[in-house]
Amino acid sequence: MTTTELVVLLDEQANPIGTAAKSEVHHSQTPLHLAFSCYVLDPAGRLLVTQRALHKKTWPGSWTNTCCGHPAPQETVEEAVRRRVRQELGIELEDLRAVLPQFRYRAVMADGTVENEVCPVFVARCADPTSVNADPDEVAAYEWQDWTQFRDEVLAGQREVSPWCQLQVRELPAQID
Image 1 (cartoon, one colour):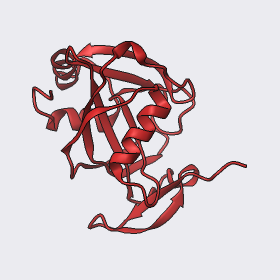
Image 2 (cartoon, rainbow, N blue to C red; image 1 turned 135 degrees about the horizontal axis):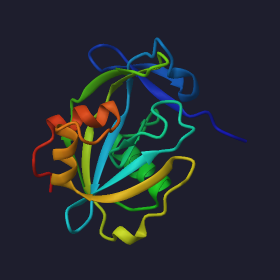
Image 3 (cartoon, rainbow, N blue to C red; image 1 turned 90 degrees about the vertical axis):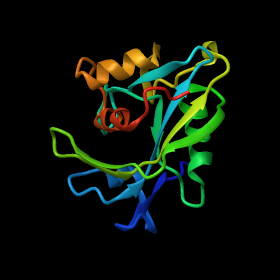
């Protein structure tokens, strides 16, 4: 038996107002909903950058921050971050902390599909960078990259990333350790 994955719908003040099936929420009139983004660093301060699986509904094949996802109803955002990082990348997080707790964005794909999210942004640590075990249903590829280099390339327009990652990098500090 498969369970329908739900996302939490929000009003304009970011208050929960209901749920919707994740499989049906992303379209040309995507309602505002709750999500998260996480940037995972290794002990050397390198960022784990991922490429979204090629079959993803939104921004397939795009390079982006370590992990994105949606909290389930009754799940805290922090619990969702830990769950999705474990599911997508097989790693356990240390020192998880919110760095852009009020981040919100709206982006439109070329085909008209919209992302419309209140998306708190987190930074965390991974003690063992060799422990990554990426789920191919979620992640097409990954690499560890120096944060400063990644940030500089994104800000200079030299590295294409997902629209949310581009906006977040603009707001994140030069040092995120």
